[in-house]
Length: 342
Image 1 (cartoon, rainbow, N blue to C red):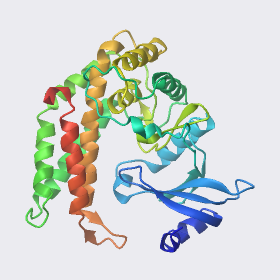
Image 2: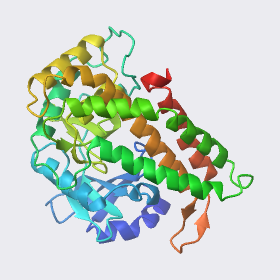
Image 3: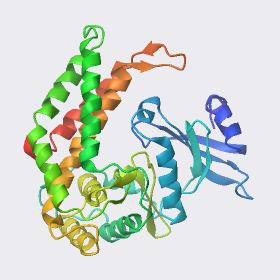
């Protein structure tokens, strides 16, 4: 265990109630927040146990509702669909939760992929039976109480569009020579705006198949899913809310390496048990996948902006062009996955 790491995290360990800490190690998963594996004693358990300490990034806190995140997380945890959270800091800047060991000596994150609405035919099954485990998770999530935080997909697009337009104006007032990421940011946003008609069509398609909103995690990529006790659990509820029933299915289809047979089975069986959708749902799945990538572009642009114009704890402006550049690379990759851009 690194003494410097233990010293850096000492305040968080103490406040969260951890004692007798014997192991601390960084967890690499996650594009924004910092996650650490910790072994130690906590009042919630009688013996030394394994935990995850998560430090929320300033940038991600700008675009999510931490109170809603905690409520959604606890709701999923009560249904045994997520690890139990045992400490939430009063300012919601860091959390402590139970650590779930991965099963089969494999990590579900191995299934990470990036698929458009019409992926190429794929016959290989990287994880046989993955579709059945995913269906169990999807069906479990849709049965959770509907969160009070309601963000329908059309509202989400309006929020993102308005926020990005404001960011554009702020960047136009900056000297791009001093901020190398500004010009690429503006180019990526302009590229997204050329898809406005296509995005409106996606939203119309999704509206036509909607019966009721439901609990939606909204980011079920493989890095946010753990396998243990012969079932899947999800983490990272930053964007969970009441939203369209196809959101979670779309995020799975878009981000998992599944065979064509697995994808078709998962879609058919999820829709077969879906009372919150009507008979137009099957035709709306491609639009839902496209919209997943549209929102991914919006997310990446917001994260890039917050790294171009970030502020330290004293309110002083700081710039992280390297990190901003990484997010802009993500934005460009996501743009290419939108069917109308292909």
